[in-house]
Length: 357
Ligand SMILES: Cc1cc2nc3c(=O)[nH]c(=O)nc-3n(C[C@H](O)[C@H](O)[C@H](O)COP(=O)(O)O)c2cc1C
Image: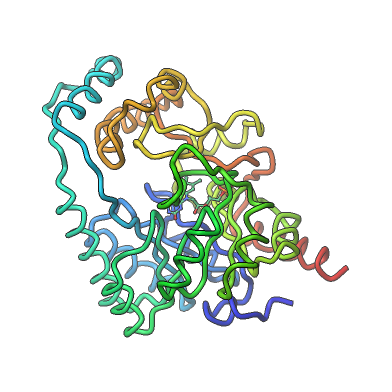
């Protein structure tokens, strides 16, 4: 049932990918448990320094012999003047005083620095011989892709439209994540007009599957065997699940974040740019509501993300769910408090039952 191109190129038993989730969620325990149970554990390394990434890779290798993957954010070109940055900072001042945070002079982070860090992350992956790498927010330049290919590394890209999927295939990517608008966290979009699109997974899978020859991995709102079976029926060979793994015991998500998902309904998530300057889906809270009408004036990613960092951390530290990002897909009602082996067992049993019918 599962022996197809995707499981073959990734070297895994079941085509169930634990979504990379940047920000401390994808602990070594989580990643290794998913891989050890036949799926693919993935590290969300987007915000990690090269040395943090290297340490975690070493730690995972001690825990599992199986394959795992690392996901990186492709640095975007952004434009933000000193004034735009200061205006953005001013909007955040009331929240800084709420948490008694000291004022500081924000500085525009040069894009050069982000690109340097990205190159250093890539070098760590090569040095540590990580065999599968995934990208979101676009693809790195051809030279980097070629370098990874020369090392025998399998590359996974992310697409939110058919056009983005076709671009990924042309660039030589080995498999593509079709990320529907149901998905929790940041949209991987890099070509769509940021205010348009929002294509749901049921539309996206078959249209991408018809347009590329590489295996398609479905992502967005998939929480159980029904979602896996439906994705396969629509033309995907596998799935990438974030929210479902976030509430597992092994995940490093803040307890407040886990509880928020476990207590939410499908009506509680919304799209926002408030936390990072890039569209992302999370559970609605005070901070998102306050910025509802100001989203178009905020500094771009990653500037806004840097500006809100201390506020998000302070909110977390005080167990206050109102000022931290509570990323979640659109199916929180299906989230469960389980261990990874329990969740994997359920996913495989349910999807096999449906697909063997
Ligand atoms: C908390 C959280 C963090 C995420 N971080 C990343 C990330 O670092 N890189 C990435 O490619 N996708 C990230 N995503 C998106 C996932 O890859 C995936 O598209 C999404 O989780 C699918 O929707 P679901 O949460 O309903 O399963 C994140 C999702 C969540 C919920």
